[in-house]
Image 1 (cartoon, rainbow, N blue to C red):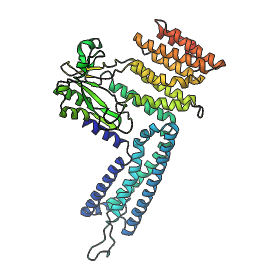
Image 2 (spheres, rainbow, N blue to C red):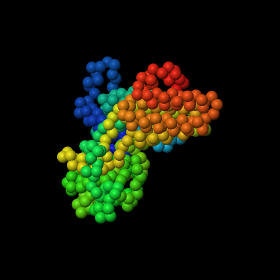
Image 3 (tube, rainbow, N blue to C red):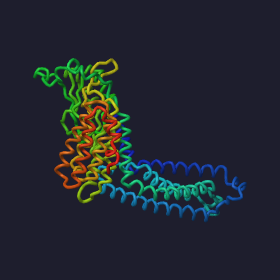
Length: 468
């Protein structure tokens, strides 16, 4: 249930109707409150302020009618501009970035402000009565409500000025990349070093993993696997780790996850394998199934690969022959380098997850530094290797990541990536461009081959002075 609630919350965050609806309801309550105060206290309090003048029925009605008509017109224009900006951005940077613009709080609040002001004016104007308009009743003008309406108009003008600046700044490519990079770094900080349960020592794999989940499992052991199958088609957007652990512990199960956030699953596919099968009853299966939130698209709720893929997509589009914008690709490489440098300083969790008592409960997908490097730099290598500017920056970003690495196996991963990139550039480039990129690659490889590679990377004049 928690997974589905979090998915609903993410959908609301990316909707253009939720925030404006909340603001519209707030405007309705504000209008009722202001009219109630006016009807019970009157407008005599305004006589103490010479700079305030009580409005007459005709003037108040005309003012609020003008405000309401103007606000609904501006709201329509705002919505049109927003949609045009969203269509442009999704076509220019990639359709998967549409959710980034849909979740922009500034656009939602701007639209909500104009709608709220319109609704407020509409509700207040209907309470205004001229003298003699109703037999036996005096005229009524909610002076405080009209004054609040004027204040809302001033706020709406300020929001309109903000919106005019906000839209072009949000679709600026550097701002788009920055938002993705910031969220990627934030997710890395939230996710690691521990994700689901408490990590166990990988060296204890053979002793802790049941026979049914080993590569050399016998047919008899495999028969003891229970399966929890999906009932929907789509991408796994979220996995509720608490539900998995609680259910496994309550039923004395060991679970092996077959998918991770971002993977596509279809009806009938096995989401989780459980051991022993006889302990997996229908209630446990239903509880485990609810731990998976499945939707029509990937999201960044738990999927670091999705954020990396967004940066890769922008860079790949920028390096396409039709666009040929290596400097946008360089910005993506900078943020990828920052994310992987941060990741290089962290301990990635074991695929074995235990409960509070130290008992193995979940076997998850292993997350490795090499896997993330391949997802980011490996995916971009074929594009950056064909461009001198992007190629040099690619190698510089690898060097920056190496400055944060301490583990020899992670340095070996970067060395392998640099060698593969050098081979691609050797075939894709020619002439002076080829020599410049290969020289930079050789400098990086020579530095990484030495024990004091960090000093060599920092002190190398050719490295720091290059056109990266």
